[in-house]
Picture 1 (spheres, helix red, strand yellow):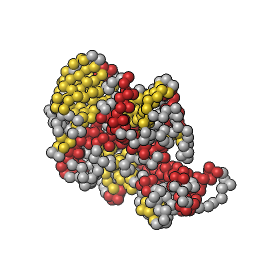
Picture 2 (picture 1 turned 120 degrees about the vertical axis):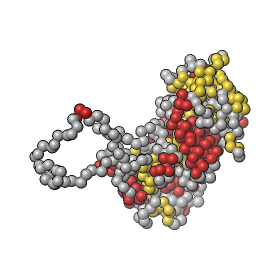
Picture 3 (picture 1 turned 90 degrees about the vertical axis):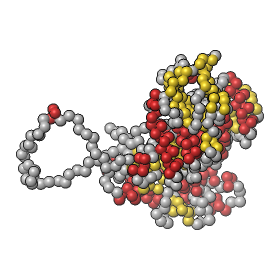
Picture 4 (picture 1 turned 45 degrees about the vertical axis):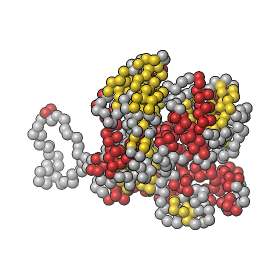
Length: 587
């Protein structure tokens, strides 16, 4: 029977890179990152050390076969015992970088033949070394964090992907396509010697498809090796998390094999970070998603991004070089979230539109798909609409508007589902080219050939087509045109620049998270006199809300706010908002 993972128990995980448990507890961390070298040299894992074996007949030890002496206290009077002492105050997450090569046998190479500072994902020796390191990391600690999972994927093809192991892997891939009669040859030489554009060179598509497949396969084997070693050596189910750079196609694909993801944010613009935060939560479901701020973030940035991460149902971690003031700001935010965690239980986001972010499409478009989807998510947030991110369209579209941005290489199942949704009466906003591709990146016919530009009917639905790189004003106009059938479910008006993110539990409550985006040199410009209007289908029968804010002393029950009926919605004037606030409305 499968055992339960004991850590982490929830999808929220407050991580700290601090090496000392006392300092980690001071900043509100639930676990600390410990390098594998330090973990293996440290004390034994948490628990009670077993006593040394004794010989029968020794002082205080009965002879073999003798009955033990009766206990001084009867068993019925024993009562509950205190919990077993633990050797660690804060759980350990043991980190292991499996992307570092151990020698020339597993080191990848650049197109010019120079050695690359990354382990080849196609190398059998490299996969074995990565699995061995992951297995050693599973020998101690409460969880494992495998680092560098996407380094080889990011380095190829400009700086890696041209070693002998990559050559053999490509030949085997081509043999699976063309048949066993294919004779061994050097496809990389033909790829490098061609004068054609990189995407049109011989075997370029096959090489690009193999790049994504090999990165996922190498990581999957290391993850399975760590889990198997924990079961064999410790008889426990160990959580295996992964750490990547900024979100990429490989990172999103790897989420299905991991128990959590730690990823980097590449910008201090909250609207640029919106899509990665939403996409990470969509890819991981109920597993932890932790974002790392870029270096140089100020205290105000930490407060703002901690609020944004909470609104997107993820967690935040500051970089190792963060100042003491930044760590203290994050600790205060974690303390506030711990106070309202009982009411902060997002069940399902309130959705006005669904944005498709397909990892395969992002891979074939070299990141253009994610950039276009990120611009759409920011525009929806500025238009006070609630966007949700979908990684595929399995199960159909559940909102009234589907966004296909930069979708020039959609997987065929998603393309079929999108076309079926529109023909059945749905609306679609298409930004740039939109066409299906096969498994090797061959582009098919346009998905909506009857639509050239602007708003056109397709079947029972409508498609608004915009050119690639359209200005935000044109995108906003298209959103208003398509959303004319209904109004935004959460509307804010007043002095302040706020981001609202709502979660609905139909049988319990509605949570509205409010993040102040008006960040200035001296700190936040307090939003005052903001009126919030909530559609009746979202608010339900609630006529009162409870206000939670870090700077206010509402306690765990919050401050009661009356909601006034206004047509088919309810509205109220909110208290002042500094950085972050939460409005919980019982239904």
